[in-house]
Amino acid sequence: MRESMSYSAVLKSELAHLDKAIGRHCLISELYAIIKTNAYAFDKNKQYSIYLNTDNAFLAYRFFDLLDTAFGFKAEIAVRRNSKSKKRHYILFVTGDNAARVLNAAMSSMVLKQSCCKQAYLRSVFLACASVSNPGKNYHLEYVFSDKEPALELMGILEYFDISSKLIMRKKSHVVYIKDGEGISQIFGLIGAGKHLLDFENLRVFRAVSNEINRKVNCETANMAKTAKAFVAFQEDIEYIEKTKGIYYLSEPLRAVAELKLEYPSATLKEIGEILTPPISKSGVNHRLRKISEIAEKLRSDLRG
Image 1 (tube, rainbow, N blue to C red):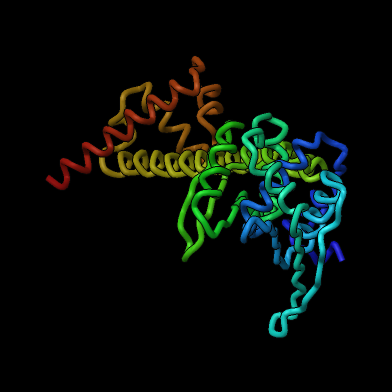
Image 2 (cartoon, one colour):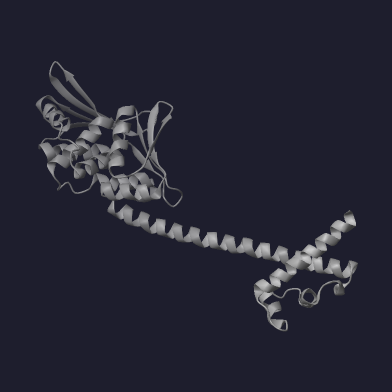
């Protein structure tokens, strides 16, 4: 079953079954997040109702369990199957005094006051409306809201934890997204996704090392190609001077390098420098070869001119 689940679904499964042996204020903050993002609350003639209709089994389970743990009652629940998509929909009801108790607690001024409550809020918001790409492919976490207000509230809480996010409109939805691996890793830690955090960090390290290796290989390949091209150009310049003016047209120091380059075309600058009498450095050989190239270019220019 887990093999066929998406990366987001596996993560939500872990979050839905997290231990709820935490402060009641945090449990209420989780309920607040679900009510604010996915549920509907009604007050008709002072008769309160909370209604959650979702195809997210993990969210339904968490909502049901939170009510039981925090308030000691069970929501009414019904399961329907969509005739077209064949998806199961979970419908949870809380009415009367129980709904009033939940709403009074969830909408009180004390919700989200503590840092731990903000973490609990992030956990339920993730369950309710987040999706995350498999980090083996790319870094992308997004939350989709039907209204702008909860989107802005989420961004404010992310900012509290120094996590940068952006907001865009997609059709009629408000989408908060994060493409930064560090930010996504931080969120995993805050919401209690311990196993995924460890796997994510291992993957981030692996990708960082791989990228660094690739960068160095690409850099070295580019340098080798540049060096090879320069070596060919030096060879052509020396051969041009020899053909048009003769090798003795060059001064003795330049001629010594030119002759060795012709005799040992694949020798490195260091090797040519070591053969010379007296030996000179790699940069000294390079300097003489550049002088030879300048002479060859001047001869070509004079010929064209």
